[in-house]
Length: 230
Ligand SMILES: C[S@@+](CC[C@H](N)C(=O)[O-])C[C@H]1O[C@@H](n2cnc3c(N)ncnc32)[C@H](O)[C@@H]1O
Image (cartoon, rainbow, N blue to C red; front, side, top):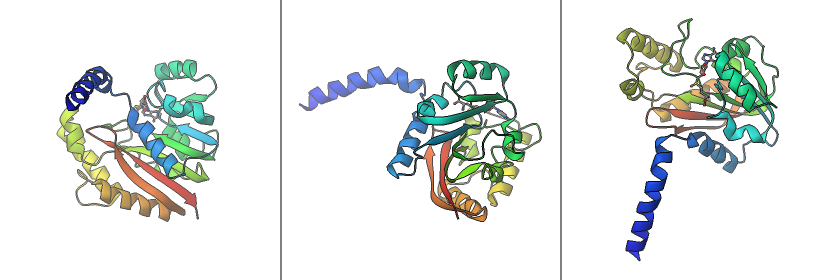
Protein backbone atom coordinates (compact mmCIF):
# COMPACT_ATOMS: atom_id res chain seq x y z
CA UNK A 1 0.00 0.00 0.00
CA UNK A 2 2.78 2.37 0.92
CA UNK A 3 4.47 1.63 -2.40
CA UNK A 4 1.25 2.58 -4.27
CA UNK A 5 1.08 5.86 -2.36
CA UNK A 6 4.78 6.44 -2.94
CA UNK A 7 4.49 6.04 -6.72
CA UNK A 8 1.32 8.13 -6.79
CA UNK A 9 3.11 10.96 -4.96
CA UNK A 10 6.14 10.68 -7.25
CA UNK A 11 3.81 11.00 -10.24
CA UNK A 12 1.98 14.03 -8.78
CA UNK A 13 5.31 15.73 -8.00
CA UNK A 14 6.42 15.23 -11.61
CA UNK A 15 3.21 16.82 -12.86
CA UNK A 16 3.27 19.73 -10.43
CA UNK A 17 6.97 20.66 -10.69
CA UNK A 18 6.71 22.71 -13.90
CA UNK A 19 3.75 24.60 -12.40
CA UNK A 20 5.58 25.29 -9.13
CA UNK A 21 8.64 26.42 -11.07
CA UNK A 22 6.52 29.04 -12.83
CA UNK A 23 5.63 30.63 -9.47
CA UNK A 24 1.91 30.98 -10.00
CA UNK A 25 1.44 33.51 -7.20
CA UNK A 26 -0.66 31.28 -5.04
CA UNK A 27 0.60 33.27 -2.02
CA UNK A 28 -2.00 36.01 -2.58
CA UNK A 29 -4.80 33.47 -2.95
CA UNK A 30 -3.78 31.80 0.32
CA UNK A 31 -3.66 35.18 2.06
CA UNK A 32 -7.16 36.01 0.88
CA UNK A 33 -8.43 32.59 1.96
CA UNK A 34 -6.87 33.15 5.39
CA UNK A 35 -8.63 36.51 5.76
CA UNK A 36 -11.88 34.80 4.73
CA UNK A 37 -11.39 32.17 7.44
CA UNK A 38 -11.10 34.99 9.96
CA UNK A 39 -14.39 36.33 8.50
CA UNK A 40 -12.71 39.64 7.76
CA UNK A 41 -12.95 39.62 3.95
CA UNK A 42 -15.36 42.36 2.74
CA UNK A 43 -18.77 41.21 1.49
CA UNK A 44 -18.88 43.92 -1.20
CA UNK A 45 -15.33 44.24 -2.40
CA UNK A 46 -14.16 47.76 -3.32
CA UNK A 47 -10.60 47.06 -4.41
CA UNK A 48 -7.56 49.15 -5.23
CA UNK A 49 -4.59 47.46 -6.92
CA UNK A 50 -2.07 50.30 -6.82
CA UNK A 51 0.80 48.58 -8.66
CA UNK A 52 -1.11 46.27 -11.00
CA UNK A 53 1.17 45.91 -14.04
CA UNK A 54 -0.93 43.88 -16.55
CA UNK A 55 -3.03 42.42 -13.73
CA UNK A 56 -2.47 38.92 -15.04
CA UNK A 57 -0.50 37.83 -12.02
CA UNK A 58 -2.26 39.20 -8.97
CA UNK A 59 -5.34 41.20 -9.92
CA UNK A 60 -6.94 38.24 -11.62
CA UNK A 61 -6.92 36.38 -8.28
CA UNK A 62 -9.62 38.64 -6.80
CA UNK A 63 -11.01 40.64 -9.74
CA UNK A 64 -14.10 38.45 -10.20
CA UNK A 65 -15.13 39.12 -6.62
CA UNK A 66 -14.86 42.91 -6.87
CA UNK A 67 -17.93 45.09 -7.05
CA UNK A 68 -15.56 47.95 -7.94
CA UNK A 69 -11.96 47.56 -9.01
CA UNK A 70 -9.49 50.40 -9.51
CA UNK A 71 -6.10 49.59 -10.99
CA UNK A 72 -3.02 51.79 -11.35
CA UNK A 73 0.39 51.39 -12.91
CA UNK A 74 2.88 53.92 -14.21
CA UNK A 75 3.91 51.73 -17.13
CA UNK A 76 1.90 52.58 -20.24
CA UNK A 77 2.44 49.29 -21.98
CA UNK A 78 1.36 47.27 -18.94
CA UNK A 79 -1.78 49.40 -18.64
CA UNK A 80 -2.66 48.78 -22.28
CA UNK A 81 -2.92 45.06 -21.51
CA UNK A 82 -4.64 45.67 -18.17
CA UNK A 83 -7.39 47.64 -19.92
CA UNK A 84 -7.89 44.80 -22.37
CA UNK A 85 -7.99 42.13 -19.68
CA UNK A 86 -10.17 44.01 -17.17
CA UNK A 87 -12.74 45.91 -19.24
CA UNK A 88 -15.02 46.50 -16.26
CA UNK A 89 -12.27 47.93 -14.03
CA UNK A 90 -11.30 51.58 -13.64
CA UNK A 91 -7.77 51.25 -15.05
CA UNK A 92 -5.39 54.21 -14.71
CA UNK A 93 -1.97 54.90 -16.14
CA UNK A 94 -0.15 57.13 -13.69
CA UNK A 95 1.69 57.56 -10.43
CA UNK A 96 -0.41 55.76 -7.82
CA UNK A 97 1.78 57.09 -5.00
CA UNK A 98 0.86 60.63 -5.96
CA UNK A 99 -2.78 59.53 -6.30
CA UNK A 100 -2.79 57.93 -2.84
CA UNK A 101 -1.04 60.89 -1.21
CA UNK A 102 -2.91 63.68 -2.96
CA UNK A 103 -6.51 62.47 -3.15
CA UNK A 104 -6.44 61.53 -6.85
CA UNK A 105 -7.92 58.05 -6.52
CA UNK A 106 -11.49 57.76 -7.77
CA UNK A 107 -12.89 56.63 -4.41
CA UNK A 108 -12.07 57.00 -0.75
CA UNK A 109 -13.86 53.92 0.54
CA UNK A 110 -11.62 51.08 -0.58
CA UNK A 111 -11.98 48.01 1.60
CA UNK A 112 -9.16 46.11 -0.05
CA UNK A 113 -5.86 47.74 -0.98
CA UNK A 114 -3.10 45.77 -2.62
CA UNK A 115 0.39 47.29 -2.63
CA UNK A 116 2.70 45.13 -4.76
CA UNK A 117 5.39 47.81 -4.98
CA UNK A 118 8.66 47.09 -6.77
CA UNK A 119 11.52 45.68 -4.65
CA UNK A 120 14.44 46.07 -4.53
CA UNK A 121 13.79 49.52 -5.98
CA UNK A 122 14.43 53.17 -5.18
CA UNK A 123 11.81 55.62 -6.48
CA UNK A 124 13.16 58.68 -8.34
CA UNK A 125 12.67 60.79 -5.19
CA UNK A 126 14.93 58.42 -3.19
CA UNK A 127 12.13 56.67 -1.27
CA UNK A 128 11.69 52.89 -0.90
CA UNK A 129 8.90 50.30 -0.63
CA UNK A 130 5.64 51.83 0.74
CA UNK A 131 7.35 53.98 3.37
CA UNK A 132 6.47 57.40 1.97
CA UNK A 133 2.76 56.74 1.41
CA UNK A 134 1.86 54.16 4.08
CA UNK A 135 0.02 56.69 6.28
CA UNK A 136 -1.85 58.15 3.29
CA UNK A 137 -3.39 54.77 2.42
CA UNK A 138 -5.61 55.27 5.47
CA UNK A 139 -7.14 58.44 3.99
CA UNK A 140 -8.54 56.33 1.16
CA UNK A 141 -10.17 53.40 2.92
CA UNK A 142 -13.56 52.45 4.33
CA UNK A 143 -14.20 52.06 8.07
CA UNK A 144 -13.38 48.37 7.70
CA UNK A 145 -10.59 47.42 5.31
CA UNK A 146 -7.88 44.94 4.41
CA UNK A 147 -4.46 46.08 3.25
CA UNK A 148 -1.92 43.68 1.76
CA UNK A 149 1.61 44.86 1.00
CA UNK A 150 4.94 43.43 0.00
CA UNK A 151 7.39 43.45 2.88
CA UNK A 152 10.97 42.22 3.06
CA UNK A 153 12.08 40.76 6.41
CA UNK A 154 15.73 40.27 5.47
CA UNK A 155 16.97 42.29 2.52
CA UNK A 156 20.07 40.13 2.14
CA UNK A 157 18.09 37.10 0.91
CA UNK A 158 16.62 39.32 -1.78
CA UNK A 159 19.89 41.07 -2.64
CA UNK A 160 21.53 37.65 -3.04
CA UNK A 161 19.37 37.03 -6.11
CA UNK A 162 19.05 40.69 -7.17
CA UNK A 163 22.47 42.21 -6.42
CA UNK A 164 22.59 46.02 -6.18
CA UNK A 165 25.44 48.50 -5.63
CA UNK A 166 26.62 49.01 -2.05
CA UNK A 167 25.36 52.60 -2.07
CA UNK A 168 21.82 51.46 -2.96
CA UNK A 169 21.87 48.84 -0.20
CA UNK A 170 23.00 51.42 2.39
CA UNK A 171 20.24 53.84 1.40
CA UNK A 172 17.65 51.05 1.55
CA UNK A 173 18.85 49.94 5.00
CA UNK A 174 18.70 53.53 6.28
CA UNK A 175 15.20 54.06 4.91
CA UNK A 176 14.06 50.84 6.58
CA UNK A 177 15.69 51.74 9.89
CA UNK A 178 13.86 55.07 9.83
CA UNK A 179 10.44 53.69 8.85
CA UNK A 180 10.51 50.77 11.27
CA UNK A 181 12.30 52.72 14.02
CA UNK A 182 14.95 50.02 14.45
CA UNK A 183 18.73 49.99 14.69
CA UNK A 184 19.37 47.46 11.92
CA UNK A 185 17.15 48.15 8.93
CA UNK A 186 18.68 45.24 7.04
CA UNK A 187 16.73 42.63 8.96
CA UNK A 188 13.32 43.23 10.53
CA UNK A 189 11.83 39.89 11.48
CA UNK A 190 8.10 39.32 10.91
CA UNK A 191 7.34 39.13 14.64
CA UNK A 192 8.93 42.57 15.10
CA UNK A 193 7.44 43.99 11.91
CA UNK A 194 3.86 42.97 12.76
CA UNK A 195 4.08 44.76 16.12
CA UNK A 196 5.44 47.90 14.44
CA UNK A 197 2.61 47.96 11.87
CA UNK A 198 0.08 47.43 14.67
CA UNK A 199 1.40 50.53 16.46
CA UNK A 200 1.43 52.57 13.24
CA UNK A 201 -2.18 51.63 12.44
CA UNK A 202 -3.33 52.46 15.95
CA UNK A 203 -1.54 55.83 15.83
CA UNK A 204 -3.55 56.57 12.68
CA UNK A 205 -6.83 56.08 14.57
CA UNK A 206 -7.66 52.52 13.48
CA UNK A 207 -8.01 49.30 15.43
CA UNK A 208 -5.74 46.54 14.11
CA UNK A 209 -8.00 43.49 13.97
CA UNK A 210 -5.34 41.35 12.34
CA UNK A 211 -1.72 41.97 11.39
CA UNK A 212 -0.04 38.95 9.95
CA UNK A 213 2.90 38.00 7.76
CA UNK A 214 3.11 35.20 5.20
CA UNK A 215 6.02 34.33 2.97
CA UNK A 216 5.37 35.00 -0.69
CA UNK A 217 8.46 33.15 -1.85
CA UNK A 218 11.98 32.54 -0.53
CA UNK A 219 12.89 36.24 -0.56
CA UNK A 220 9.98 38.25 0.78
CA UNK A 221 6.41 38.17 1.97
CA UNK A 222 2.97 39.70 2.22
CA UNK A 223 1.93 41.71 5.24
CA UNK A 224 -1.83 41.62 5.78
CA UNK A 225 -3.52 44.24 7.91
CA UNK A 226 -7.23 44.18 8.76
CA UNK A 227 -8.42 47.42 10.33
CA UNK A 228 -11.57 49.07 11.60
CA UNK A 229 -12.01 52.76 12.31
CA UNK A 230 -11.96 53.64 16.03
C1 LIG B 1 6.13 44.30 -8.64
S1 LIG B 1 5.45 45.04 -10.04
C2 LIG B 1 3.74 44.72 -9.86
C3 LIG B 1 3.36 43.36 -10.32
C4 LIG B 1 1.88 43.13 -10.35
N1 LIG B 1 1.23 43.40 -9.08
C5 LIG B 1 1.61 41.73 -10.77
O1 LIG B 1 1.28 40.91 -9.92
O2 LIG B 1 1.78 41.47 -11.95
C6 LIG B 1 5.57 46.72 -9.65
C7 LIG B 1 4.86 47.63 -10.61
O3 LIG B 1 4.88 48.93 -10.04
C8 LIG B 1 4.84 49.85 -11.10
N2 LIG B 1 5.20 51.17 -10.55
C9 LIG B 1 6.39 51.62 -10.13
N3 LIG B 1 6.28 52.87 -9.63
C10 LIG B 1 4.98 53.21 -9.72
C11 LIG B 1 4.23 54.36 -9.35
N4 LIG B 1 4.81 55.43 -8.79
N5 LIG B 1 2.90 54.37 -9.59
C12 LIG B 1 2.30 53.30 -10.17
N6 LIG B 1 2.95 52.17 -10.53
C13 LIG B 1 4.28 52.13 -10.31
C14 LIG B 1 5.80 49.27 -12.12
O4 LIG B 1 5.53 49.77 -13.40
C15 LIG B 1 5.50 47.76 -11.98
O5 LIG B 1 4.58 47.35 -12.96
